[in-house]
Length: 354
Image (cartoon, rainbow, N blue to C red; front, side, top):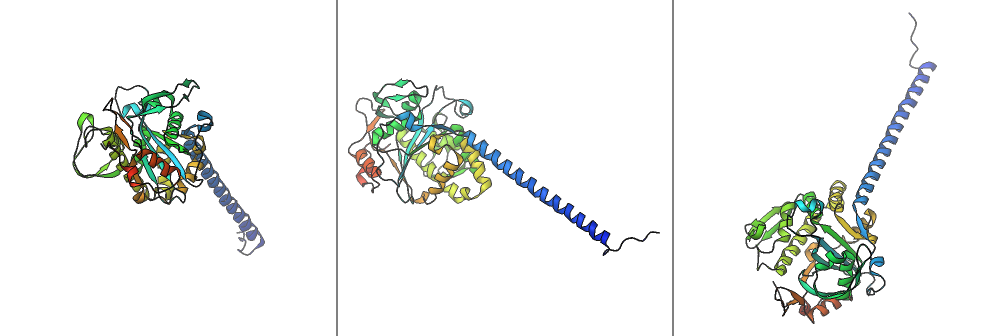
């Protein structure tokens, strides 16, 4: 019988070296494949989320006739909620309505230092002067007086809403973000729901949400009904609905903070995927990196210190179902935000309260 080579023989050492090199190559190859897979998956995720975002070039759409920025470090963000029934949105609201309007509009002012914020809701039934605008096809939409604020979006799109708000307020809008029904529902469901508390029952009138007084955990579909409830809570006015929208926004921001959603990659991806599917922004925000940088810069804003205000309005004397901007309160409010100053108490006093 042939003697086997000893463990210390030259041939054994050569085999071990060859085996060790093969093992090392296998390990290195495996690591390389994992890195490529991770990079590929990351690139796919980035491309997928980036591709979800629609954008509008505000400077091109509005032109040069825009307010000057007064405080360089402050930011003004216009948040729009569209009531489009197109695509998946039609399954969430079956109202017999064509086109789309800005169902919700909030101008969020973040002062220099970015440690707090103020959100000003603009009632959709406010009669305003619409400036001349270009629609999405480049056609001119003529200026008009005494038109409802929420009609501006349907006639000329989000850039015209930005231009209208800028001319109303004299404030330069740095960015805008628009989310439709499906995007809103997806964000709430990605969070696992949002908790709200009612001090009185919500009746569910005209197909709205029915809730007892107390605390409720709402999924995406019920959250959409909650923020769109008008006739089943309070005085049934659009002004009363603004209170519900502001309450829900604060609850949603608190939920994001509570879950540390921005610090959890898996949860953040889920939120981003849900949110960007129905997201339109200005061109400066229309990428994941830009959105992430903006969100990171806002981390110091605490929902507990965020102030919510309704633009001061008064009932219109010709049509009591509509409201007009109340002066001098609105002028004082806009001036305080434009110059990054404390908002006077009088500027928060709306003659029409809802």
